[in-house]
Length: 506
Image 1 (cartoon, rainbow, N blue to C red):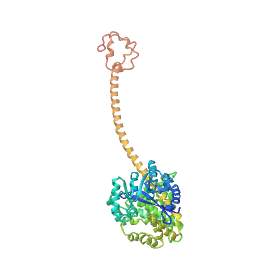
Image 2: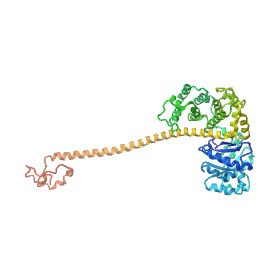
Image 3: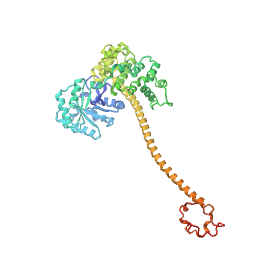
C-alpha cells in the first residue's frame, strides 16, 4: 500500500496507556483526506484494514479517522464495536448525509470522537452523538483550547489533547483538565526514571547486550539468567507454556535455551524481563523499545549500505528509548555501553549513516510523512513496503506480550487456586473435626448403653424359655428389657417351680 500507517499511544493523567490512534497518510504528503483522492484512498485503506485488522488492535481502545467514503463503504464494520472509536473531521461534518451516517453507526453500538471541535452550528448539531472531543495542542491558542475544554465538560464529553510535543504543552493540558494525552512527548514520557548505575548493572541489561551480539556466549547468558530468580522463573515458565507445546517439561536453564534458540531468545527477552525489572520503565515504553528494535532489524533487509548488521540495528532500536528510561544525559548513558561508535553517533548525536535508519523510525512514530519518504529514498527502502513491515512488527510484539501475559495470568491463577485450596482445607478441617467430635460422643454414649444392657443380660443368664413362667406379668416394665436380644427361645425351664412371686418381676 502506498500509504504510511502508524499508531500513537494515548495515555491518562497517571501515564497509563489508554489506547492508540491509527494514523494514515498518503506517500507524497498530499494527505489521506484530500478530496480528489478520497475514493482511491478509501479502497486502498479498506483493503489494508481488512488484511491487518488483527494486527492493529491490542487490548486497548483504538481511535481511527474515517472519511465519508470510508463510512459509506462500511469500513468500521471490519472491527468490533468495543474495539473501535470512529473519529470524524470537518469533511464528514459538512457532508449533507453526516447525521444519517452517524446515527446509523451509533445504533449499531459504535462510539464517536471529533477532531478539532469548532464553535459552529454544524458541530453543536452533532454534539449528542459524540463521546470524545479531541483538541490539537500543537496549533491552537491557549484561550481557544480553554474555552473548548470548558464546553466539553459542560456537555459531559471526554477530552483528549493531541499534538503534545513539549513539557509546556503537556502542563497546559493538565491545567485545563484534559482527560487523556497524545503526542511524541507523551509517548516517551516516563513518570519515574531509573538510576543509571542500577540500570546498567541490572541482569536484564547485561542479558540484552549479550544476546544481541553477533556471536553470543551461551555460557555467559546461562550465568546471567541463573543469578536472577525472576528471569529464571520467567524463562522456564515461557518455555513450558502452551505456545511451545513441549512433550516433556523443561527444568533447566541450558535446556530452555536450547529449546528456545538464541534467535528466539532475543525476540522474547526484552518483554520477558519486564516481570523482573518493572521499575525500569512502563509497559508502553518497553513495548515501544521492542517495536523499534524489530522495525530496525526488518528494514535492514532492504538496505545494503549501512555499516552495521541486523543485530546491531536491532540493538540501536532497542536502546533508542534509554533517554526516557534512565535519569542521565545520553552521553553518560552510552559512555559505558559496549556498542560500536557508529551506533553511539546515531543514538547520542543523530549523526553518521546509521542515524538515517534511526531517524526514519522516529519520523514514522511522529507521523512526519514527508521526512519518512526522504529517509526511505536515501536508504533505498521501498516506500510501499514500510506500512506492512511496521504492522508485522506490531503483531509480533503483541503476540509475544500476550504470551508472556498469559504466563503471568497462569501464575496468578495457580497462586489463587493454592490460596483457595488452603481456605477450603481449613474450613473442611474445622467442620470435619466438629462433625467427628459429635459422632465420637454419640458412639461413646452407645457404648455406655450397650454396657448397661450387657449387665442386664448377665443377670438374666440362664432364663431362656421364660414364656411359660407365671407371675412375670410386669416384665415389660423392666428398664432396658425392650433392648435385650437373644430371649426368643425361653419356652421351658426345669427347676423353676414356685417362683410365682419373684420380687421385682411384678
